[in-house]
Image 1 (cartoon, rainbow, N blue to C red):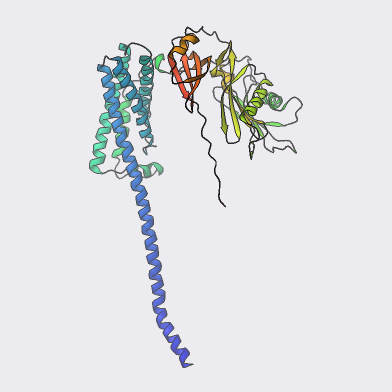
Image 2 (image 1 turned 90 degrees about the vertical axis):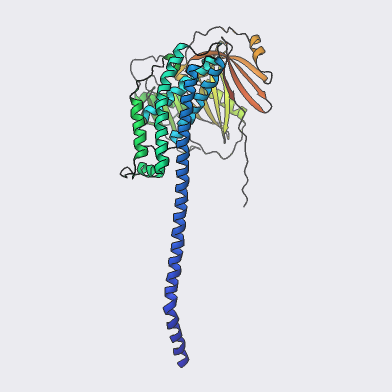
Length: 466
């Protein structure tokens, strides 16, 4: 009994120190955890601050380069220097736009600044295309527009330079601006950054809009005239869509899910699956309100594997189009997206492929079922055209094609250029080593209008170890 009392006495004595010791250890652990959290947050904040500082200083540098190159174009009379200068301006504009997007300025309106950069990009690209395809340099009217752009670029350069000096001298924080942007009621300790951009935008607003004229703006396509003075009803749209997708004797029931607005107003329809169907998913179809044309359709489908190849999928897609009145369609592009094949077809007029009038069909590669259709471009642009005759013969074209390109196909086509203007071209498909390309040469002037790399993406297979 005495021994028990002695042990109990010792335990009580130690207990006085164990509990405080445990509390000390717990507090130390919490402190270490808190310090790590603070350290990690501080590290992330420092990284964000560094990234914002980099974006801002790169923006300042790119705008200074734009200003300098515009001035250089004004005083230059060399076609070769015009080409180099315009190409530099175009690249710098894209970089400056990316830098603005990398700054936490969501609540600062910069529409005039962004409009200036967009205008400068369009003008430089348009003039670059024109100068490279001619033997002359910039015209007097071109230089006048460049001078107007220069006046605005100079203002941006000076304002950004002044802000850069203040940010550096006063060690201002971009992350504080970011916090204020995410919390609308937050107030900055120093508004110099925000005030600087607002002042810069205000100065840009003082300049009138630059009249770029038709040469520097994208042209809106002439859309097909739609017959009919009244819109089709939702009930009629459901009837048309049911027969178009499912067939004459089908029993699917459709309902109006939404009404779309835009260049072509639509009815968005949903057709529920029938009882016992293998694919227990609805079909979604968009129908033009103007005349009941099917513009888009999609049936979601779960596919576990591919049982047919892309060639078989092409035949299924073409048969789908032919059964719905699309005649003389030519495949111009095929993509495999996992277990789906996506096929782009264009119509043909007098052997000329009409690229603006394309349709797309999506085919499931497990059983060849068509699961998607996109026909809006065909609906908007397809019509009989008065096509010009090619001034450049195929024999003449072959002489100017690079000898490094192994030509596989040459055929006439109609494309839309950067500005939306339709151009008669020679389409040339070929390869170099393992790379495949399609090039479009102007059939009137012989200039190379466009080149695209069409090498299929590399496929990767992954194995997961148990």
